[in-house]
Structures are given as structure tokens and as C-alpha cells.
Length: 114
Length: 115
Image 1 (cartoon, chains in turn green, orange):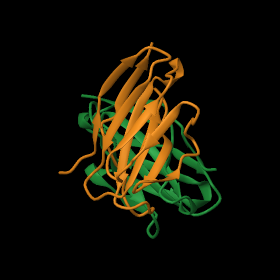
Image 2 (cartoon, chains in turn brown, blue):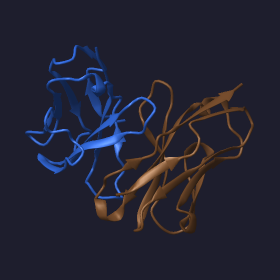
Image 3 (cartoon, rainbow over the protein chains, first blue to last red):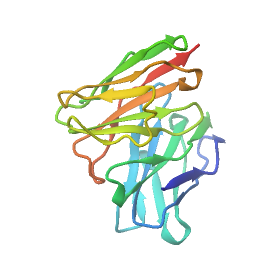
């Protein structure tokens, strides 16, 4: 079975700082990779996804993530955060042989101070 | 924009009582998922439906949890009897089909507190 680990539980940073959230998964086969975001008071929504092709994927709101197959990693980045990026971020993995089942990491709470 | 609807949004119940949650997926979505999210953790899949059939319920505690989607549209998740450890957010999601390329859309969730 696959598992997902997110290294940081809480991150606090100031506006305009750069953000990088780590995500590592354990699964030997082919995977699809996702980052979901949950803003305060809102439901989970997809930020970006990687299925195949260019390992650097761009999502909404200026976020991007890089898939490094050799490191089993899919780290999320944003060069300059805004106060509105305050949210909880979840990395998720779908093993291609497991239908559409998502396995989520534990999440990282990001607080951006104005 | 179409959304997944869930009710109630909050539920407080005493242990040993029965509790039920309802989910209405986005119209036309054949696949429906129930997740449980314990505070401080990521969502964990409990059960997946394709139309009215259960595709995956390997993580569903079947001694106390049950789920149904009788007409292949809306769904109910039931817990009987509730235990203190069931306190969590219960999320419903839907996708057009149950294939990896199809995005899952999440509802607002039902926050359950068992006292």
C-alpha cells in the first residue's frame, strides 16, 4: 500500500517570502500526484496535479510542484506568498493500479503573516 | 458552479447513539467517495461507490459503519453505535468516473463530535 509523508506540520512566514512544502511518497509503481488546498472555512480543492510528462507542473494561484522520481518526491513551491495563501495544504498520491483512490499526507498548515 | 452538498455540517452525539450523514454529489458524477479526516491528519478513504455499487470499502469499520447509495445518486453514511474515537470530519467527494484522470470534488464536510 502507498503512503505519503509531509515533512512540516506547520509553517509560518511573512508575505513575499518563498514557500516550499515537502512531500514524499512510498510506492514502487506508477503514480499520479496531487496537491490539494483547504482555505479557512472552505472545502478541499485541487491546486495542481501531475500525471505524466514535464515533471514541473504549474497550478492555480502561482503554485508549482516538481516531481523527482528518483527521490519519490513532489514538493510544492511558490516564489512569493500572499496573506491569502494561509491555508492547509495536502499532498496526495494515486497509484495507477488503484483506480481513483487517493492516499493523503497529514497536511501542512501554512500561516502567512501580513 | 456545481458543488457537492453535505448535511448536516455539524453533529454532536453521545457515544452509543446512531448518527447519519448525507451527501449529494455533483449531478452526473458516477463515482462517490466518503473520507474521514481526524484532526491533524489527512483524509482517509472509507468507501468508494461506482453508481450504486461499492468499489472499495476496505477501510470501512464494518462492525459499526455502513454506507449506501441506493439509486446511484445521493448517499448516506451511518455509524451505529458511535464511539469517542469517531470524532472527526467526514468528507464526501465525487468524480465523473472512477478513473485516475478525473478530478475528485470535495464537499464542505460534516464535523462529528462524539461525547
